Amino acid sequence: MGNASQPLEQRIRNKRNGIGRQSRPYIVYALTLAMLGVLIYELVYNAKEQGNPFSFKPTVNPMLGPSASALITLGARFPPCMKLIADIPLDTYLPCANDTANPPTITCSIEQICAFGGFKGQDPDQAFRFVTPIFLHAGIIHFIFNMLAQVTAAGQIEREMGSAGFIITYMAAGIFGNVLGGNFARPGIPSVGASGAIFGMFAVEWVDLFAHWQYIYKPVRRLIYLAINLIIGIAIGFIPYVDNFAHLGGFLMGLLVGTVFYPTISATRRHALMSWGFRLAALPLVIVLYVVLIRNFYTSDPYAACSWCRYLSCIPTSSNDYCKG
Image 1 (tube, one colour):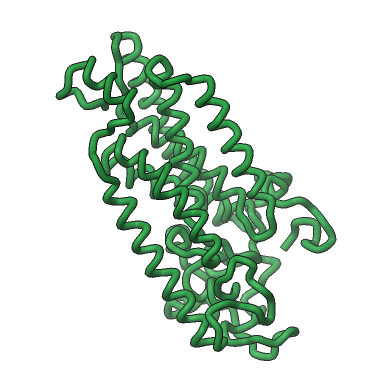
Image 2 (cartoon, one colour):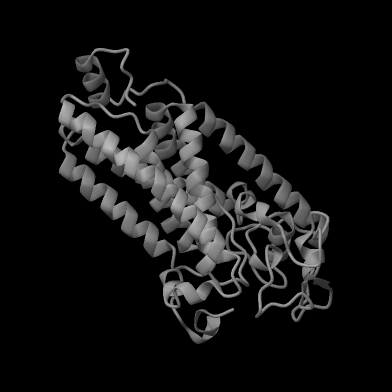
């Protein structure tokens, strides 16, 4: 999957100099502009509903963004909009997007707050919420941090992979992060952000490192840098309202899909055979993980498959009902 049109020595030289398949990350630019447009729409929507683009009532959004209800209405991952949740039945009423009182005085049914024309039948069915959260952000602060990582790390990955392989890997990681979070994160907490997709790009950096160890400048130092980044990212995932499952799921899928699509440089037949062996092993794993976890999501109790998994994204305290709900 490398650029075989160039001599091996030139490809190695390009790798060492950080020169990729293309000069500019066009998809990253397009995604970033699209996400900026969506963020502006979020703030305008919240201003229309609450009279302020930033939510301060009934609860403060520390990311400087809209209310949780507004995020749900705009497409956040929120399992009660996607399937029946035993602990959050359809007759549950939640604060409407225009409510600013605490306790709430203006409430909406789950179907009303899920918007998008409601449900086609009697049960929640908005499976598109595995995808839409990638383009939403909790606020300006959330957006800035994600876009800094996207323009830098993801931008370099697109230059090296090419736009086609990049967008497939990016979306596969982002969607799988939401699938994993839908299974094991707290179902009553909405989740948004491109973090899963961005963590998928971090994973591709690991694929690159181990595939091209001998061509990377000071690979041990690079390994330590990537490990520290990963540890920090996972630690951030324990902050309230940050979904570590999106991080973990995106990273795992980024490793697998990145293995399939990342262009490798093989100086020997043995290295080429190993690269293709990893690709052939990774592809069925991608399919199996998607099928198993989507099927598990639509069971009556996804938590039953892994009762302790919720603690990978939540430190149990009395304030969060010990990671329940």
